[in-house]
Length: 144
Image (cartoon, rainbow, N blue to C red; front, side):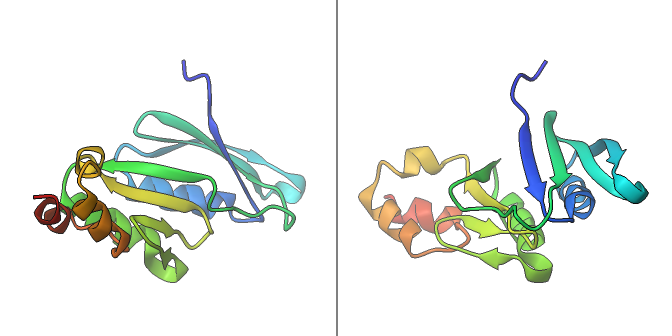
């Protein structure tokens, strides 16, 4: 059993956010919804890659900060490209060094699995600092 669950508090977009995430990541699924006052969905339990998440509509006093992000470990450039495009679509935003925000304001790191090894090269680090979406081939070339 998973002991720690990521809990995301949205203004009023918990269900659309969960629906987006389960559509992007394979093996994603909505596990349950909890109605709130008036019958609208207040909370959503969902799963991505076997990891549980909870999303809640908490009202306008809640917002996301870049100090907390969800890191996605990617094996291929195609995987990076796909996740990046889907997460930054429809109002999402690119940032630096593999970070982006989705249209709900949640920060994501879309990172190649090879990054820890590549960060041993100062030239690869320098190349990464100039990128938004990370390019595995360019990082590999810079690291040589």
